[in-house]
Image 1 (cartoon, rainbow, N blue to C red):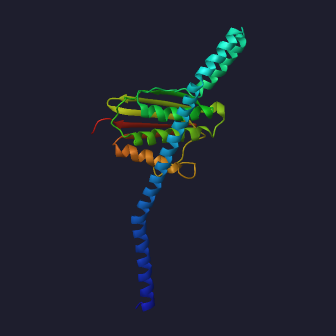
Image 2: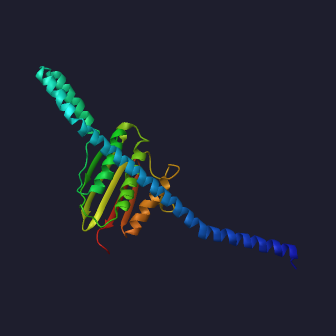
Image 3: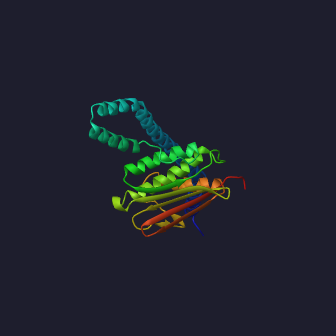
Length: 245
């Protein structure tokens, strides 16, 4: 027969195992949810800062417009045509850094896309972007911002690990059969890794939560998500219904 001490030890072990299991089942989802919420808040704040920086640059350029005109008039009145031409070249370079690259038709999408495109240019990444989005869209702005922001951030992070001449991102957004179609393709080093059917991130910290947020938003709106990888390429396709299923 088992001794009382052995029985007590076995019961204690089973109780500890049960307590750990309950802790995992009930505490872990709340912990992960808090981490994802904090990640989303950080992401939205970063997006806001990026958009605000871009528009602050644009406002600054417009504020200086009068001074630029006066400088050009001065060069022209003195016959300094080469100096005026050189000044125009410098203005053109400066304007490229603040110009709104895309006008999709949707203010929210314009804001997040153009803030990211500005960062892409700073990282010397070749980009081919086409986007057409209705002004009024039946998707929450916060979800749209988080979704597009994460897709663009992931693409940029993959590209920056490559030499500049190998970096590229292709973006295509349109409405197809009452669904918002988003496609982002980017160059990367090697192939993306998978575990249990899920793609893994090579970046430490919040990057993994970014992938989860994309998954959650697509699932929330009963959309379609497809990720594909081959050597040197990663592609993501998202389709979100614009009407209730």
